[in-house]
Image (cartoon, rainbow, N blue to C red; front, side, top):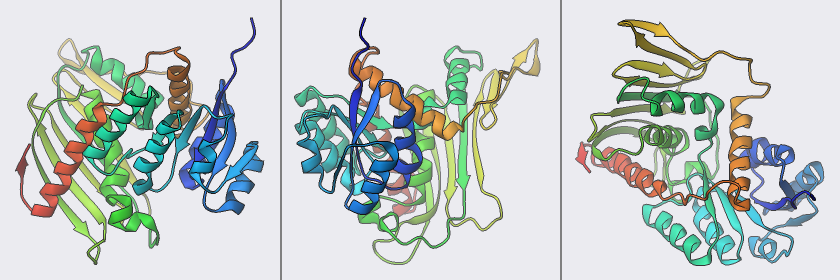
Length: 336
C-alpha cells in the first residue's frame, strides 16, 4: 500500500518560536512537510527556508494562501495578528495551528470557532504544555482518580529578561505582558487537568511599566472554583536573580504531584508514598518534545486518524484571562 501524502505546511512568522520549535518539529514529524515560509523579513525567511528545505518564500500571507500546494499553516506571528491571520487562512480553505493566544479577546475566539465551523476547516491552539510527556503522565494519575479530587494548583515562573524592546512590550499588540506570556500556559494547563471547573471569584495584583500602553512585568492571581479548587499563579519577567524559577504543583485529597521533574506522592495504607513513574530520560528537551507531539496530534486530526475537537475550551480560558486582568486593573476581587 502506498504511503499517504504528507500534509503540506506553510509557516507564517519566522520569529523565535518558529525557529526554536515549529520548524524543528516539522523537520522531524512523519506525515508533515514544510513547503513555504512567510515573514515580512524576506532575507530571514529565505535563509530559514534554505535551512529547513521549504521551496517557497513569501512576505505577504495573502500570497502564501494562494499557493495550491498548501494544506495547513502554522501561525506564529505577533499576538495581535493571530486572529486576522487565522481567519484569512480559514477563508482560504486551509487548516490552522495557531500559537497561543489565538485571539486577544474572548469574542475573537468565538469568531474563529464560528469561521472554522462555517468553512469546514480545523483549528488548533498551540497549548504545547498539554503534550509534554510528564504532563501526560500526571494527567493519567489525576483523571484515574489516584490523587483524589483536586483542591489546589500552584504555579509560577520568575525570570529576568532584561530590556527587550518590541511588540511584546506594547499592550495593543501583545494583549498583555508577563501573565499572558508566562501565566496563560499555566492557566490553560490547570483548567485542562481539572476538566474546566466553573470559576467563582478571582483576585489579582500586577506591577506595570510606565505609559498608557505598557504591559505588566509581574502579576499574581488567585482563582477559586465551584469544585473547591484554588489556582494560584505568580509570574514575573523582571526577577533579579542568577537563576530562573519555574514550578507547577497539584494537591488532591489523596496525593500531590509536581513537575520538572515529575514527582507523584499518594497515600498508601495511610502513609505518603512516592509513586513517581520511572523510566529512561528523554532524548530531547520537554520543550521540543511537546511541540513535536502537538504537531503530530494536529496532523492526525487533519488526516482523520484521531477525532477533531474544536478548541471551544479556549473561550473559558479567555473569559477567565479577562477576569484576571480586570481584577488587577480595578484593584479588587471580582466575582465571575
